[in-house]
Amino acid sequence: MRGRPMTISVLLILLFAATTLPLKIVATINPYYLILKEITGQEAQVDLLIGPGQNPHIFSPKISDIRKLNDADLVIANGLDLEVFLKPYLEDLTSRGKTIVYMGSLLPDELLVDENEKDDDDEPGHHDNPHIWLDPIILSDHVVPILVRTLSSLDPGNSEFFSSNAANLIKNLQEFSDQTASYLERFKGKTVIVAHPSFSYFFRRYGIKLEPVLEGVGDEPTIGEIMKLVDFVRSQDVIGVFAEYQHSKRAIDILMDETSVKHGELDSLGISTGSIMELLQWNLAEMKRVFDGE
Image (cartoon, rainbow, N blue to C red):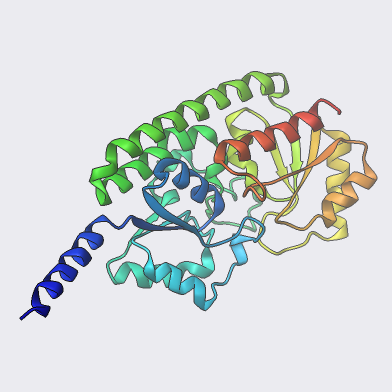
């Protein structure tokens, strides 16, 4: 009989612990990981699946990654075919009742950039650019509010805390966008060359044209295609050429050798940044360095 109260006490402790455990969240890519950490603080366990030095377009999960996904209460993915190799695993989790949020699928269609809208007739089809997190207004007006609603539905006790942190982040994003718009105003209508169309949403927001070297994933332009780009750079009002950390630099290196246009390197995923604001500010600083000829 003496052992029975001990058993009941242990059960009560375990039950209490189970009701107070923080949410376990997995973000597929670093920008969402940074945003979630800022919103949840110490009130959730947030894990990152795909490191910022990896290319999410070609990421293939290991057994430890699958285990991490299985243990999560919530998975935040970008969607729009960014994490294409994760699709069967995420669909399996959905079928088993896990909460999977695809951020791109929750945005209004009119906000999405069609990567094929200027293709020739021999390349038909519609494909939405997945890099939505690089537009600060998409983040402030859509992504952050969606995350707060999702988190609050799963952990209503921390809803006010999540909302307060999100409000500060939204304010910072809007102020950043205002400052960026003011700086980039004089470059409206001009063109940048980029290794990959990761910054399509960012440059569209501020009226700058973007010409990507690589449209697809893992492809390489031919020498003939690169020389066409060289001619394009020489004939157009191109204000900068940008490589990108997660993609091949071969074509960009040739452009830099063949033209006198200022060049730099952008980072869409935040290899060494500690917050989403730091990621955006770092890239803007690199653009300023190039555009101002420093």
